[in-house]
Amino acid sequence: KLFSIPLLPADYETYGALKTVRRLSQMKSLYADQEAADRLLENGDPVIYEVYELPHPNDETDLLVNITVLYPGYVGDEPYMTKGHFHREPDTAEAVIGLSGEGELLVQNREGELRSLKVAAGRISYAGGGWAHRVVNTGSENLVFFAVSGANIVHDYETAAELNFKKRQ
Ligand code: 6PG
Ligand code: NI
Image: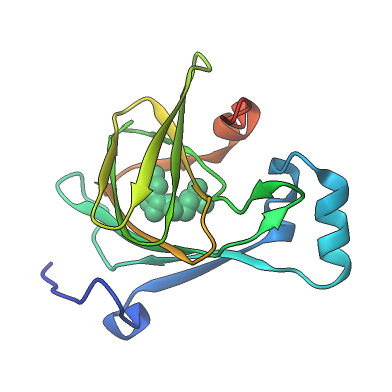
């Protein structure tokens, strides 16, 4: 597999990227303020983020290469965020490279220890294996970031949802 594409700005779908749209209704339970989420859903179902997965084989020798556009906004006083997950089989590390906007990479391990790393244009943040990761848009513009990890991972959203990055700080 070979490819070379612009990182930003780019219509990633023209390069064969698979687009996934995440709306509030698909991740409502992850937000702290359920009443605020219900109020938002009465007026529609806002798009929280879009993920563009670049085409790749799922072999252990390949890389999973994604670009996420995380919109600015709040559910109550909590900024828009990604669902967050662990990687398993194998539990590989992930590098997150900020392309535009600003936010934080929340990471939490299976013991519940929580850390926050900065995400910003031109900055790389690295979460080793064993750290569930979620990105939060703390700014007022789109937060666009590039993420790369092993191609043969399975995303584990359930364990991360149980921990749910509880003590955001
Ligand atoms: C990955 C990255 C990243 C992530 C998206 C959406 O494993 O590919 O962590 O690209 O998938 O930012 O976040 P969620 O997968 O948690 O919804
Ligand atoms: Ni990941």
